[in-house]
Length: 79
Ligand SMILES: [Zn+2]
Image 1: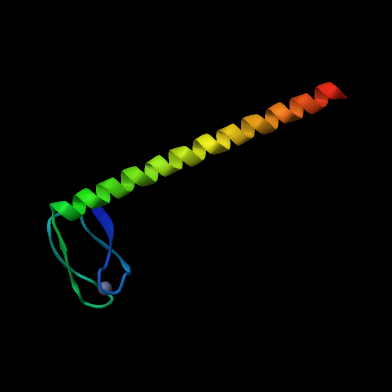
Image 2: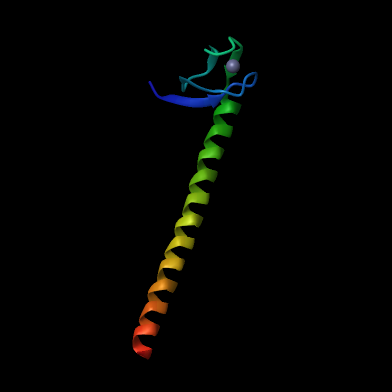
C-alpha cells in the first residue's frame, strides 16, 4: 500500500499514513487526522506545484550555465 506524508493539523508535525481514505491517529499528539478525497486532491496539487518549481529552477540553472559557458568562450576568444 502506498504511503504518503501529511502534516498534522494540531502539532504541525509530519506523519506517514496510508494513501487511503480513513482516520489516522497522530503519533505525536494523538489527534485524529481524517484523510478524504479532498485532502488527497490537495496533496496531489502540492506535488505538481513542487515539480513545477523544480522545473523552473532547472531552467534557470541551465540558463546560468549557458551564460557562463558563453562568457568563458568570449573571454578566451579575446585573448
Ligand atoms: Zn499531531
